[in-house]
Length: 426
Ligand code: CUA
Image (cartoon, rainbow, N blue to C red; front, side, top):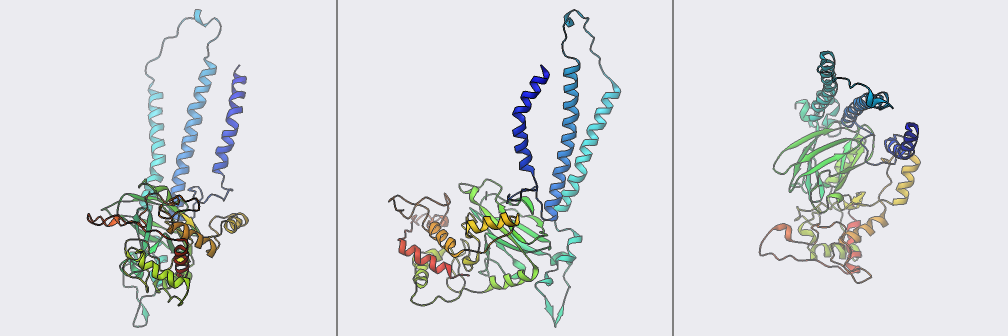
C-alpha cells in the first residue's frame, strides 16, 4: 500500500521537481535577472548567505521529515493493536530537551555568523576595496602636474547618486560633474567601471522605490526624505539588468534600469561624452522641424537637451538619448531583438549586448511619444499607453491649481520629425 502511494506521489512530484531544478540550473544563462548568478562581491556574499540557509534548511527538513516517516511506518497501527495495553506517555527527558535546545542554538549561530558578517560587509565600501578604486585612476586630480592623494581613501571611491522617480531612475555622478543641476544627468542607464567599488547614494523624489541589480547587488530601498546607501562592484564587463523592487504605483512593473559595466578607460571616455552638448541640427531637415516641435509641443519644459534646450529638469535628460540602449525607464529596448537574442544564445551570456539599432529606436520613440492615449492608431482608437500613469504630455506634475491639465497630440508626420530629431542626439 505504501509503495503504491509513494509511486503515485512520485509520478506527480517528478515533473515539479524537474521544473524546480531546471529553474536553479546555473548552466542556463538565458536568465537576465538572477540572484543565483552573482557577478560581483556584494551579490556573491548575498548568494553565499542564501545558500548557507538553504543547506541548513535541507538538513533540518531531511532530519525532521526522516524521523516522521520512520515513526509513521514503525509505529503504524497493526491488526490486534486495539487489544494491546496502552503505553503510558513519558514526561520530560533532560537529554532530549537539552539536545534540542543546543541544536537550535547551533542552527541559529550557523545562520547568524555569515548573515551578520554579510550585513556589515554590504553596508558600505570596505577598506580593502578602497585602494583599488581611486577616482584618479580614470579621473586624475592633478595639482601642479602631480597626482595628489590628499583626500582620505574613502572619499576616493566613485559615488553615484541614484534618484528614484515615478517611474524611472536618474543617475548622477557628483564627483565627475554629471548632475541634474549641471544639466548632465544620466537616466535609465548607469555606467560603472569594471572591478571598482562604487558607493551608491539612494534618494527618492516621490514615493518608495527599491534599487536592485540581481547579478550585482540588491535590494535597498529609496526612501523619500531619507538617505540610504549601499555599495556595488562588478567584476565582469557587460550589460546588466536592474529593476525597481518596491511597489510604487501604476507602472512599478515597468520601472527598470540597466547597469553598463565597462573597462575603466572606456568609462573615462563615456564621462567626457556625457559632458558634451548636443551637436547642431542640419538645416532644412526633418530633424530641424522636430527640434522646433520639441519646443512648440512643450517637451522642453520638462526635458533637458544641453546645447539646445536648457529649461527642463523634471524629466529624463535627453542630450544623449540616441546612444542609450533603452527608453521609457528602460521598458522599451532599443536594440534589434533578434540580433540580441542570437548574441545571448551564441555566447550563452545575457550580459553580452549588441549596439543600438536605429530602426528599433525610431519605432520606440514614435510609440513612446505617441502613447499616453494622446494619438490615434490606424483603427481610430487612442493608442495604447506604453506606461500607464506616466506623466508625458501632462502638466499635472507641477501641482498648480489654476494650471489646467493639457494634453499634447501629434500627427504621424510630427512624430516622425520628433523621432528624427531625437535620433541625432548621440
Ligand atoms: Cu519604483 Cu517600483
